[in-house]
Image 1 (tube, rainbow over the protein chains, first blue to last red):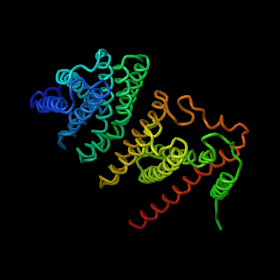
Image 2: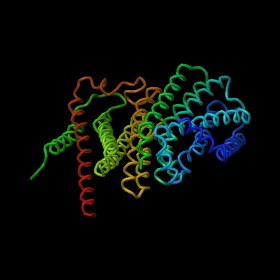
Image 3: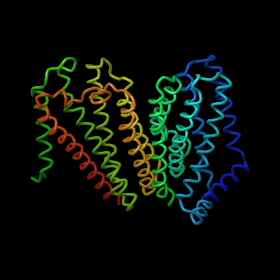
Image 4: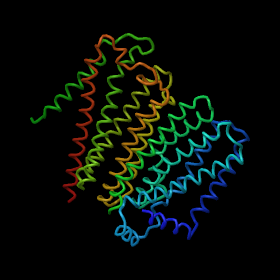
Length: 214
Length: 219
């Protein structure tokens, strides 16, 4: 599994396509957001904007998680490693990548629009927790979309309904953390989101072999 | 004539649910008034939908453990009939909401959960439509079906408990069982639930048999 992770890293480093793509995406969306929204827009607009940008950013980052595999390389992978390892290496890789992106997006939004509230650190934690389960859902749906043969539009169709729960729980938790008056309630949401992430990872572990073995 | 006992029972129960549900006595309550009768139909549609989708889940799991196009057929038909039941449940619920909450649609966790699960099953049908090869289609859509069902159940169970809801039985609102002080409604409620689940199962059975005949003719 670690070999697979290193392999993904090397592949990525060779082209740096995804890194630049996502960097540019994060930068330009935050800049557009700053043009649209005035300074200090209030917690609800700020966190709504953050989650919205995060959603699109992670979809673009994840949509080719299981693509760019030729038919020959697919056979090669199948002989060398177990499907569970393949799933977890990609899940980890994209999850870590997504976390980095979210940090970047958060920083950029803070820079362009201003920090959302005095409780920004706990908001940030909620966003990080939410982004992990976001990535979990996305990695399985991108695998399904890739196996069904038609990628980008199918990816959006499949993942939006399943992402709404994650988004709603995450957004509500972030809001309550940002308002700062009901932290206990906010942690309940964070716990809910963590459970969601764990569930998604477990389901991916169980279901991915069936997708992979054609 | 060859009619199996459960079909006869379902037919009798549906007639009973319609007649007794509309004519029987119900508790007189402020705001709810006669709309409490919707309980027999609205809740029944959800029960039927959940039963069908659970059936769909079972056949999807069965397909993955032992590939067989008949289980795929059953899973997809159960999903689509469950979807129609869900639409009916949504419509009856909206009608009820108009007369008690004053609006057809509110931003309520229950309603959001419903909308999301219906969307997820629409995505399932789109996914099925996008693939040509029946074996690939069966396998990939079975995986998506299991994933969507588990997420849907978790969402419907978890989110209304985290936030307040206007829906009876949630967020401090009393459930219908507490309104029904004289226990009279139960005599209609439970038979009605069995009736609607039976009806869903009946339609599913017919649809599967039609599809099987079509498959037999095409070979």
